[in-house]
Amino acid sequence: MSTTNQSQMQTSGTEKKDNVKDFHTDAAVWGLEFSFRLRDPLLPGEKIPFFQGEAIKNGQKIEVSPATYVGRPLLIFFHPGDFTSAGENTLNLLSSMLNNKEAMDLNLDYMVVSTDSLSVHDAWGRLRDLGMPDVALVSDKKGEIAKAFGVLDVKTHKSFNAIFLVDQTGIAQYTTISEMDITGDVIEKLKDAMN
Image (cartoon, rainbow, N blue to C red; front, side):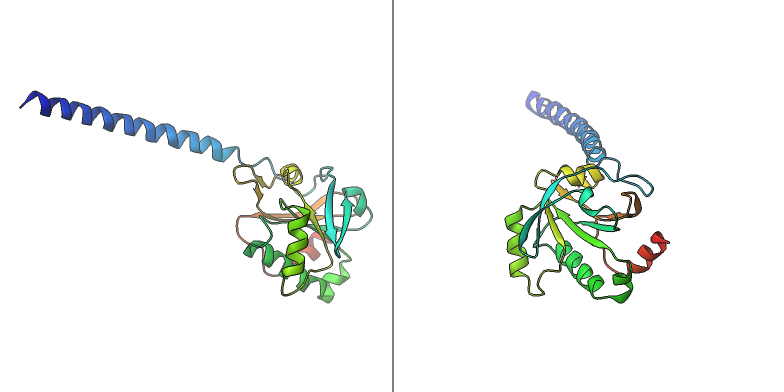
């Protein structure tokens, strides 16, 4: 065998070993990054974290915090962004709840949170074919609210789809966190959580 062929085979073998080494290193790094993408999410029975934010409601800019909703149950929705299927499904679910007698009997306040800006919320509300339900659309541009609730994907800076039912005293009674859109009949689950 010629020296050139031996040299190529040795180089080829070294490259293969380096590629295997890189694969394992990359996989380990990916695993660590993935495990730190979320904080511990808020669980039923825990007090909701304090937050302050700006929101759009009925075309008007408002300030929101947990104190705004003391004394009434609050349903907080998180979604990854306006102008997305998840955002549309969230607002469609809210619209149906606002027109459902069983949901109205629960006497809930509603809040929708995403990492979009107020101007994006406003544009989304004006451009939606179905109009905007009478809810506060909270701007969480820095992701601080989603992070406090444990639903912020720090890699994408988007929140996962989530619902938090908060009672009159600020304690979470029901939580759902999902990478998929939250649809279906949540009213029965909320009724059970409130009883």
